[in-house]
Image (tube, rainbow over all chains, first blue to last red):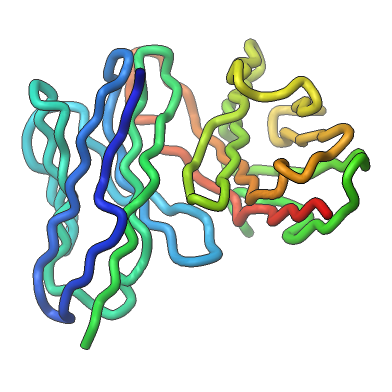
Length: 109
Length: 116
């Protein structure tokens, strides 16, 4: 079957760094996406990886290892507004997006 | 100037009714999608549609049908609503480029459907 696994909840302190992991098993691979979703709102695009390695975008970075079926989202200099759910999604060989259940991140002062 | 919009934002209805949710995108994208996000926050694709092809997730009941009057719209019709249809439904759009994987999807604000 196809699985995309992420931790359900994480807590971190304002100003700190947090890493959210995602492991996947899908039918083929055409890219991995990270989305941020605030409570009651739509997901918004954060990052995209298709090749192995690290993609950096300001305070957010995303890493991919295709051989291990693994990605992480790294958030630096955490701010209170970063409290949200973070969704890992993989595009499979049919170009369908498969989403994980999301990791709810709580940033505390 | 909203990129992807959906109406209504909230929909409360009785079991057995037929309802529609509208989606419009002004990004000039050629592919649109409908997703269902259930109470456990799983976001599952229901349909993807461009001007050439409708792809249906095989787990979606045939009570659900997408209708696209033009490239900028993909409406979702639901017949004989059931309690289990209660969820948040998200519309999304992207621009397909052959040979490219850079298809970022842009989501609408969601429609919260409650079936009583």
